[in-house]
Image (cartoon, rainbow, N blue to C red; front, side, top):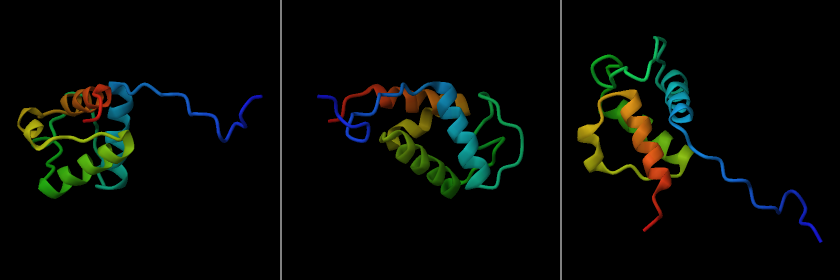
Length: 97
């Protein structure tokens, strides 16, 4: 007997850096009214001029979307969109504690 489609487990979708960058772009545009160009090398603070509230908004949206927990100690090493995306991908591969 096969399960109805609504009860079947959802296929696991692999989180990629490109997918995270697309989500960062979405959050910046829809939640933070960003209108400029975004590349993987764009810096979060210097070029995007994100303040602590904007950074928190971005992080919370990424955590909710990708079901990850970003740690405060990670913040010091993250400067660019690409570095943030790589961190999110890394956190999706970790097993919950």
